[in-house]
Image (cartoon, rainbow, N blue to C red; front, side, top):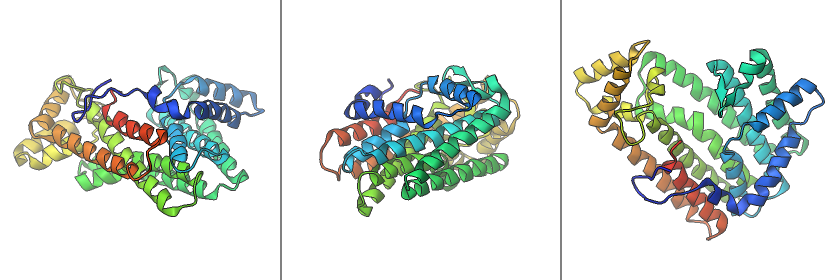
Length: 332
């Protein structure tokens, strides 16, 4: 596991899960049951989806937030299942849009069953989540997650628009990642709180904490594009897709105009060589973009920890603190 520039701690996801290990096992059964259907093809695809072992970070956030705010309830399991159903639906649809053939080391659903089945299956997951909430009158949870889906769609479309023009400034970047990524993570922590308490102040605190955590999570993802420890060997996926992220946005702002224009010419190219990607990454490093992004990520993580510190000490609070640290130290 990669260590943060601010700490040498090594944090495992298994340790973070420990305070809600039994609840997570119950959630797995609940989630599997929520996808049960009498249509053989749908059931076959659903069983295949369950074999794609993800980290289940979002249900974990719901359950830990609930435990922190009063205790895990049946409403907590419904909220966790709704989150995972909505998240899974967006991933299935994303794979169709991107033409992706792999997901979590396995063939994507669209690669096996083609786009039509994948789109309809994503719609099925979405409808199951909505019905799950409506059947139990979890209106506040449904509103929070519906708002997150709206923001995710707006963020994706704004990023597409801005990537075409290459005119993303820092404020727009934070709006995009707030909508695309932080909105769902904030909805997770809010829904966990909603399932455990009616205290509006606590619910609001957990929402803000999730938003800070989500922003830090996405900046960490964006830093992967510039390599792990060696920016001379960047992954470069975002750069290939003309996505301007925080390291490059900052470097373009502070570098001499002529040099920035030269870099933008490289970013605009339809096909970029490995040398092109390396040149852009070194530019971001040379003008402090990577250090600046790290600082912003660490500041957001510190904000999230400060909110959690307002709660009484507990296993759930310690696990959430560790999850914040894990977010900024993870290696994938």
